Length: 334
Figure 1 (cartoon, rainbow, N blue to C red):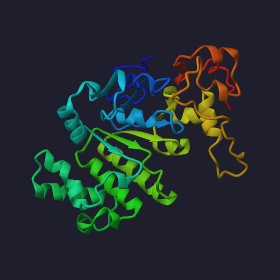
Figure 2 (figure 1 turned 30 degrees about the horizontal axis):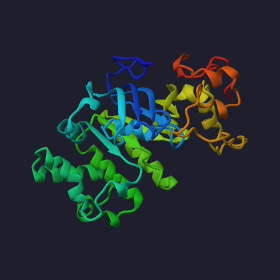
Figure 3 (figure 1 turned 180 degrees about the vertical axis):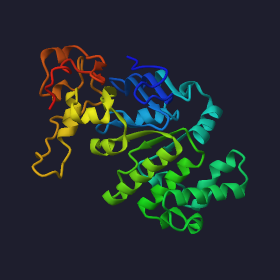
Figure 4 (figure 1 turned 60 degrees about the vertical axis):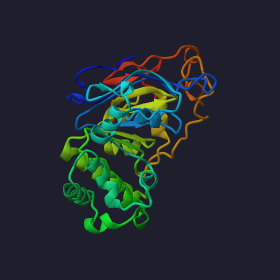
């Protein structure tokens, strides 16, 4: 089901990213179900949109599809449009231009994003030089970006190699590199998972501030709903390759309409006085080898009825958002 089209009704801005009905399937015999099953989402200019779910839900495949980075041999249907152009129909030259100018990605592990043998200055300026920016201008831009992300000695940082930075400082460098081409969209794939809590907070402040200053859209991928609440305007919840709920962040927390969303909220620890202990979601996520006939979450759901195991729920409007649950309007999720 397509959520909506044209101007984004939630953000009031023309989308920089539109994913419509995206299916991603592995070759026959390698999986029993699609990696992504009819995924649709939007990110408006200057908007931060969360994509949350457990490991294996399909979050990373969804966000990498934005750059045309799909598993080898994968078959796709649907569209992934960046600034109106379908990424899935692009050739190599067009994909290279997309990655160099329109979309940047911040990965979970900053050390996997950089060549450990090259100086940070080369890493930051190579993309700019590749599109014809004079070396002196590229270096000045790199210094500006390092200062913007809180590197205290930008000139010294240009001469250093990745192993001379802490994880948090190197992630700042990677964010600076992501901003170098002034992209319309940043895809952040769990960019704080490998960092300590204090450094996580600093990185989130940097991303939030730079997004507000530059009007860049951001797709923020995480398994942490509390973190999504701090960063995102809207949230999409993914389970077993499908979007099972989406709505504004405040409403999602106040009144989830899908039991999986409620389960994620229930298993999140809270430091508030008198808060209940976290309640883990029973069971395990559906593997790629399994093809349940009805709702993929039914076997783990305390609210499931016989219909849930027989009929796959469609993603339909409930309140101010969408949910794929047969009992979404019954108010039983929390």
